[in-house]
View 1 (cartoon, rainbow, N blue to C red):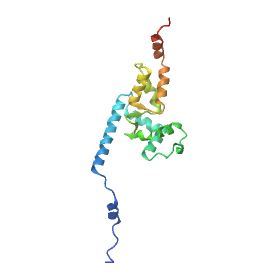
View 2 (view 1 turned 45 degrees about the horizontal axis):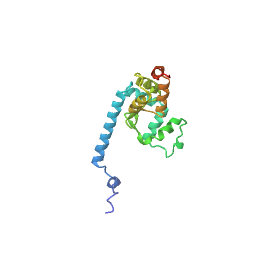
View 3 (view 1 turned 120 degrees about the vertical axis):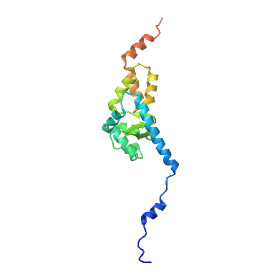
View 4 (view 1 turned 90 degrees about the vertical axis):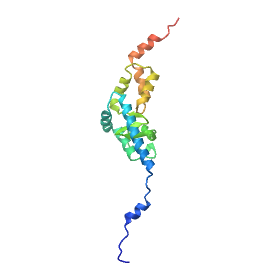
Length: 174
């Protein structure tokens, strides 16, 4: 019996490996396909394509850091983020709602928009000149970035068409 050789260590390793429940695997595939469908639906309502979002996300250093944290793991505290850009730290507080779907970042069911497209998308969504509350609601339905509400507020306040409409609808003083 001394010539039997060494026991196969891989067979022993497999006996301690926990096998995933089949329902878990099916649920994970379902969630992934749902996330992709939500991404496509969201982007279809924007004046950009998924490919445009992907390309600019890859070029955006802040979003690349966020993607890296999402794929690896976030630091325990925001002060541990080495990147000097404060926007990376702003994503830290939203980290539980962020995910990478088809190389795009999503916050819940909203697409995270790279810096290059932010003003343009807000301008396009504002083409019908909705009032402030409607504009914020519209933006919150499709897109996200840190301080998106502040950016929308500033954009609407600077809109000359909206300012003129607001002046013309004010009741006249007697």
